[in-house]
Image (cartoon, rainbow, N blue to C red; front, side, top):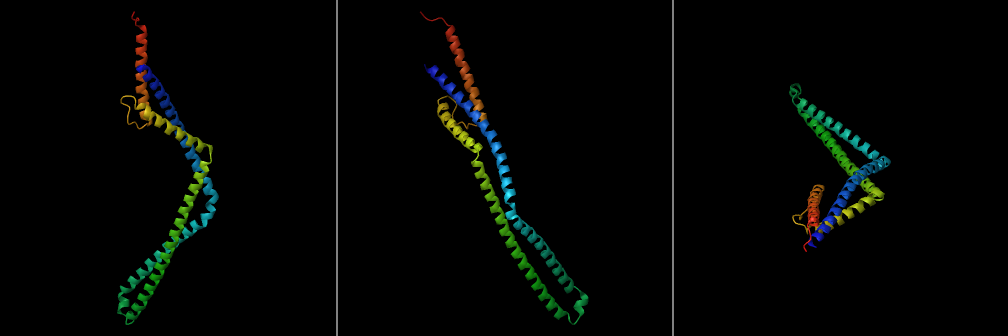
Length: 218
């Protein structure tokens, strides 16, 4: 009777393990399908909505180019200043101190004005970046919502529940077998357990076959 119960538990475990393998296989295939669809959904949403953000993208590019120009202008002003204060011909002139004061003030005012404009453009670009990031996140949410309304997602959700149920039942069932505790239920684990149970099942079948060939005691 004990061996018969073991045989039934072995057959049940093998059946559930094979079902779990099939679920894993279906989940893998379905995940690839959903991933492909999600990319398509996102791209379609992007194409239909990008006009909303296109002007911001153009503003960002224009600001970046303006910042580059301003930095070049600042570099040129500073270089001209150093050329002036190192010019020995200018230094010799009686008017040099006055020119030095006026040029220094002009350089300072110009650099201050340039830095202020650069700072404003950087702030504007930061807001544009945040707006674009938020827009992309909204597109991702919309794409996910679109996926969830599809048949594939319902099927995927059902397979996940089936997988969790099988694993829960198998943990309880396999704990009654020796050396089958703390399983992770990866594909590798499942194949190893199936192989081990099949060998155990073969032993049991052979023992039954051997017993049936023995003469009964009279």
